[in-house]
Amino acid sequence: MKITKGLLLFGVLVVVASSCFDPPEYPNQPSIDFEGLEFYAEADAIDSLVLSINFKDGDGDLGLSSDDISFPYHPRNYFLENNGQLISVPTISPYTNIPPIIYLNTGQTGKLATIRTLEKPEYASKMPEYIYPFTCTTYIYDSLYIEVGDEEIFDNSYNITDTLRSSNPSNKDLYQIKENFYTQKNPNYDNITVDFILSNNTELNWETITGTECGPSFDGRFPRLSDKDGPLEGTLRYSMKSEGLAIILGSQSFKLRVTIKDRALNTSNIIETDFVTLEGIKK
Image (cartoon, rainbow, N blue to C red; front, side, top):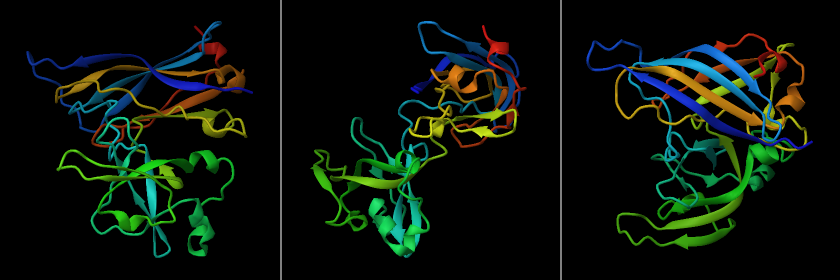
């Protein structure tokens, strides 16, 4: 069964308080309420489930740009082996078209955790086995950059594939390492979370729905809604596209549980839709 899925911002309507009158006062923590849910079955395209929510935010810092991929909005956390503990470390991405760079806080030490860390008894119980679904959700075979000066987090047992020499004296040279790293998704990478709850109150996990392959969840990002500070309110239409919507949900009743997050990492209230069927909300 082939299930491909992509996330798309279908449309955003934003109303910003005008300076011609006293702007409304909202808390800096965003608040949302449910507006609507529609299903579009496409004969010659991928089906869409479109969620509409109303939002209010006191300082208007809603949305992330495509450049917002450095700490604290980085995609994944990596880990250091440290005296039997696994210490989380983020990444930064100051350059385009190159892998992320490990970002060490002062005093963080240890070797980067990889699939080989599982062979060490003091860490094996703290990491999932190298089996599905962790082979595609947790263990990531990819390249990573490490700044010159941070060589203590790797050694000659790591696959060092390249060295990037900087032409700018203010930037450090970089080591490129390609390994099967132990990672976890950064919960601050996405700014909208969408959970699917079935009528028996079980949560549908789209990442492992096939039982054999891993796919993305319907959590995602919406872009920056304003370039000004100040109260912001409007309606966000968030479209979730998948060939698997009708296949997986069929005639089952389900509801959505939704939150959003601003750039200061304030999380909104949780909203839930009523239980619906695709046929009942079909357009």
